[in-house]
Length: 67
Image (cartoon, rainbow, N blue to C red; front, side, top):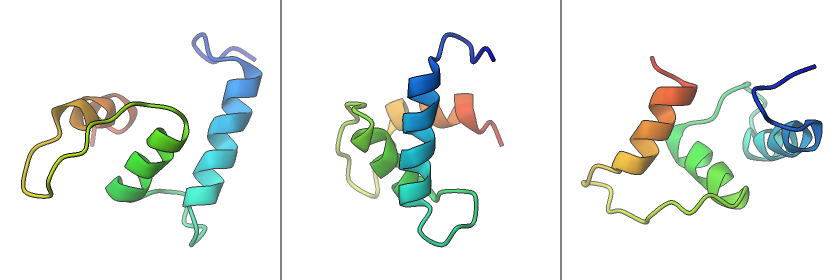
């Protein structure tokens, strides 16, 4: 199974982290939980105030969830 350059170990790690942050077992994460999940996976996301745009996080969202 090929995952666009993502190893099977990485897919397992992503899946484990997703399940950890999907506490209500809805199969989706709200933006704050998704951001926490990315940080737990080692992504260096800047901390921004709630009223400021987070362009780096928005660009990630555009890739994984364009809607």
